[in-house]
Length: 174
Picture 1: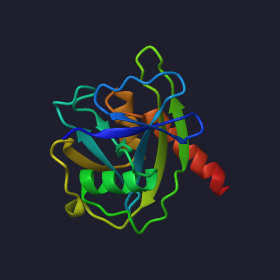
Picture 2: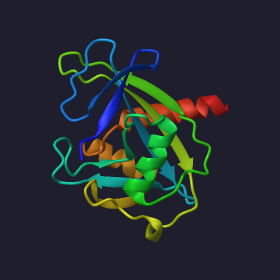
Picture 3: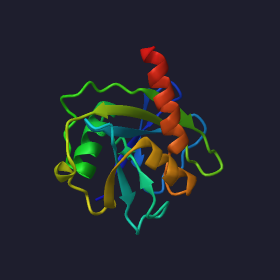
């Protein structure tokens, strides 16, 4: 099934343009939206997943849950959907506000996007996690130190962005 995305301007407003996600090449001033979810349990461990081996990019690497905001969705809808699809967990009753946002502009590749990062604190155990097999082949409940070790090995996606989000969250709470 082909997925469609809305195109946003630099102020995060929908432009009215909707295109297929696959093969999208965005021009200057055009962005797609992504969401990432840091899901931390009552023991302070973070749910990370290992990407499926048939992924075009970073196959087999570890990451936090996330994905693209589909056409017609809000970031709130997207993060709720992505967490449910990829992990089987429900965050719909949580405060859903990003702790940090960033943008990437790569005009040469047409890869322009904005990312909202969320941090959820949930009561859950490993047996509550159900992976979406097309997205992930494994998961772990990892400490921040274990995640740092994966990043040092070069097999954890978005590590510096996750660290920036955590720092922004801590500063906002101070």
